[in-house]
Length: 502
Ligand code: BG6
Image 1 (cartoon, protein in one colour):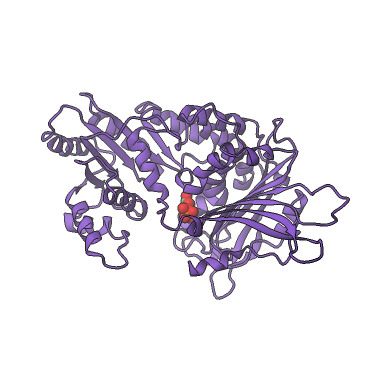
Image 2 (tube, helix red, strand yellow):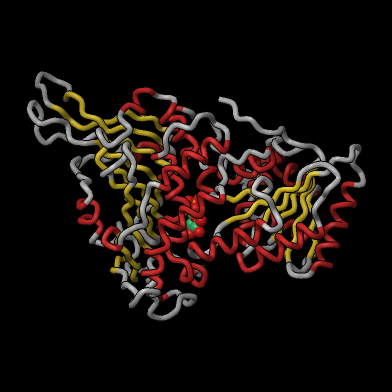
């Protein structure tokens, strides 16, 4: 399977704006290092960190490498970290002031003065809060854009607005400076190995694809669970809530790949055309199809409202389940349940496709088939199916066909999502980035429900409580049942515990 894209270019500089922030420290720099250490960056690449904070180079290097792992203190990795520091420099400057960007441009030109050819490629990664997206995008275009050959690219990350209108405003402001072709909008779920795998599982397998519709499938659940609360990030979170944080972007992206029709090719626009098409068949979410929750103190852990960064009496949901309907011939009547929560009993992201009951007659009350795509942790695909109990009697029992990555691909290194995406952006491949019209339709689906939750149409709905560390609100069981989900393999446990020994 080949994807068409430009090859990696020499003469490339990567500028990380917001270099002193959390995202850069935890995700961007470790991903850049991962690519660098595996020789996936252009040979002569240079990295410049840019942020408001004044700090000297050793301090910057310390921060930028603080999340890079070297658990065994390997001298080889230590040497690579040193090389990585050697290609990285830092510049402090304002986000609003054009003169500061002239300084940045000078730094870029100083490096480029040493190039053999005239071509200069500049990649700008905005690890920034949305309040400065637009001034930075503008200043980069006006002060740091190369026109003498080579490419300029800008990588941006959510939040892209808070509803349809604000997202449109933000997008159109960015578009004044950067073309769609130059813009790479990250949804880091699209860089996850198992999310990328969905296209292959679906379209490279006749057996799989044949059962992929309303005739065979009863319901689909896409679930995100985190075992920790907002813990200090409550100020940010409270403004956004669980739907904006995870459902409207990460889980909806997964849904679109599960539900889309087969693209004509693996070219970025072919894939994104199909994703947009299926999203357009989804009407805005109804209030009745929504369950909101907020965690309260339990098991020695604080509740959401106990977080000092959260406003008193906040009704912000830290758990949300919503059911979406796709009005097209393939999916009419099949509920797609998206659910996500913080402070739950485990860390898990998975897609669970539950098939319909087998026709009654020779079998009675046997378990439904389920195809589970475990996105993280412990990547796996397994199909729950019924088999004859071994022995002299003919009786059906639930069991599974199991593709657990750690077992089947024990030598393989699964890349970090950000590594995969930064590499794609360097290659100019947009397949795993969010197109402007995709974002627009995603906001159309969620905006009415968000306005209701924000109290724009009346009193704000009060989320139900759930204890920190639980499976979520107790109302969840009835909620999923309402859409036909049958928990009919009572006592069945997916043998993930056996993975501990791998
Ligand atoms: C981010 C959300 O987009 O995704 C966070 O803002 C969430 O709240 C994170 O924790 C989850 O990402 P991952 O890769 O850990 O599943």
